[in-house]
Every structure is written in C-alpha cells, then in structure tokens.
Amino acid sequence: MGGFLKRPQTSSGPFPTTSDSAANISMNSCTDRSPVNLVLLGMSGTGKSSTGNSILGEKLFLAKSSSKPVTTMCQLGKTMINGLHVRVIDTPDMFDDDMESSVRDKLLKNCTNLCGSHPCVFVLVLQVSRFTDGERDILTKLKKMFGRKVSEQTIILFTHGDDLSRAAMSLKTFLHQCQPDLREIAEMCGGRCVLFENKDSDTGQVEDLIDNVKEVLKQINPNIISSKVHLLH
Image 1 (cartoon, one colour):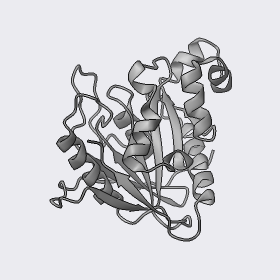
Image 2 (cartoon, rainbow, N blue to C red; image 1 turned 60 degrees about the vertical axis):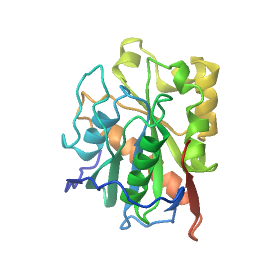
Image 3 (cartoon, rainbow, N blue to C red; image 1 turned 90 degrees about the horizontal axis):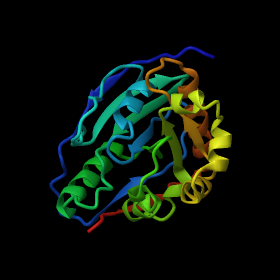
Image 4 (tube, one colour; image 1 turned 45 degrees about the horizontal axis):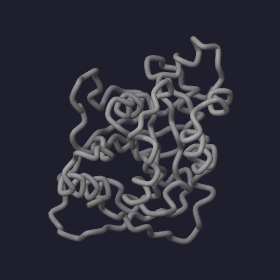
C-alpha cells in the first residue's frame, strides 16, 4: 500500500446564530487537490470518533467507552491522503428520537458551517455486529436532514471488523447474510461498504475508504449541485 502524507489539524466552529430553517451544502465535483468533506454520521457507540482518528492517523477526536454520548458537537480535522485533501467532520448522534428539535437544528447548522462550499461524502458508521431498531430507518432520517439524494453520496462504514475476522467471514458474505433491512440500506447506497477495525493501524482500510470516496466524487455532476439540508422537527 502507498504511504500517507498527513498534516492533521482540528477545529470546531460555533453554532450559527441564524434562524434559517434550511441551509445549503454545495456538492461540487473536485480534483485530488480540492478539499472534500467526509461527514461521519451514525448513532452513539458505533465508533464515529475512533473512525475519524483512524482516517486522520492521529487521536484528535475524543473516543472512549461511555454510557453517555462522548461527542456533543461537530468537530473538524484535516489531513492529506495520497494527494487528496480530506476534511473529516465528526458529529454527535443526530438520530436520537429523544433529542430536542432545537438541539438537532443547531447541530445541523454547525455541521453545514463546517462543510462550507466543499463537496461532501457522507460516511454512515454502523457497528458490524449490532444493527438496532433505531437504525432501521436511519436512511430516511438522513434524507430528511441532508436531502433525498444523500444516499447517492453515502458510504457505509462498518466498525469492529475483528468480529468478522473471528467468525472467518468476509464483508461480502456478511452483507449477503445480514438482516434484510440492513442489506436494503447497503443497496440504496450503491453497495459502497467498507470494513474498519479502529484498533489497527493498517492503512489499507483507509485507502479502501478513499477509493470509495473518489468513486462517489466521480459521480457528482461537474456543475454545482446544491442540496437543501432539511432540519428535523
């Protein structure tokens, strides 16, 4: 595997103060020299922050076992991976049905601000050995937040890859045998699925993700595609 040139940075912006009910995320095409946002999305405990650290090659996002959500606001880390300027955005669990709409709105606006005008690839983080009832309609919630075409720019990233290794099962076999609802989500996202084990420092899993990111970018219209970010209420 090729080496990585990494220059990590972290930042987190304040919540926007505007009262708009929707905001634009620009989904432009980009070259390897143009920044691309990797927006990590998923429920609490799936390993979003650890995944972000694996991508960045640095422990920049707080990640630990806890009965309460560890990530409470959107955060940004930057790096270069094989010539691609990658902006990793770690997000809290915005799919919690008990979250107040005003809190979710602020998080979405914060995420939108961090994305800026750069093209976005959404990374839906799921734990390979756990698929909950709350995740069955997660794609529907994603569409309400980021627009109906969000699945066209979404990659599914399964964490806890060692669980499959111990079972001597490949990701392809897992996807063939998994619950129908999960398989449908994968199919709606174009079958773009990668497997991560965040305890490992293997760069191959990151390169696999970046290959999928580049495939998504190739499919994006060369013209600017603006998608409304609909806020859940």
